[in-house]
Image 1 (tube, helix red, strand yellow):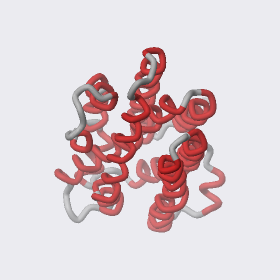
Image 2: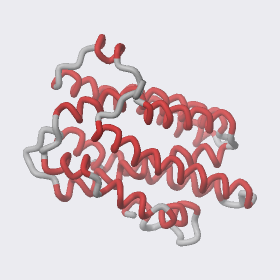
Image 3: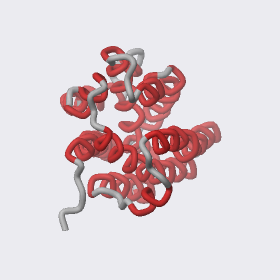
Image 4: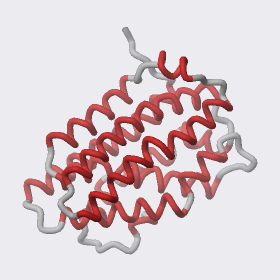
Length: 229
């Protein structure tokens, strides 16, 4: 829990991380990430992942924009509005680079539908962002930030170099990304502070579901999952 190591043991984030640690460990050690680290991940699997992640980032950006609209504190409004921009513009520029490297053009992206898991995760975030109170929205968004940061740090520590996926590894293991993650953790903990027990329970449920969907997203790419009918 590197990005949350300085947080209070009584904070929402500390409790959420502890409760969902087995799922994080399953993500960290899953075949997709092991192959990514040692550079043996097939280009077909990485292409699947990139195409679906590009779809996902659009939905993630929309959910962040809704979170920004629900924020009462102006600084938090700016934080999540900027986060929406990063999700849709800055990170997708990385995908554009990878698309070119792996021979994916705009037409192929347009022809590729969301996978079942990507559709589920995206729909979950958008529905939560619209329907739930601000603290629950943040709890649903937090795993994408935090788990990516921790997985990126872990892969960086064991990655074979040079690696065909160096750019991905360096982006999510970089200090700039980790600084943003720490800010989201802190904001989520502030939102949880003083929240009624019913809201805290919904926060934990949203965090748990998003963490499970993180595992499913990587597993889907490993299996090259598509719609069965």
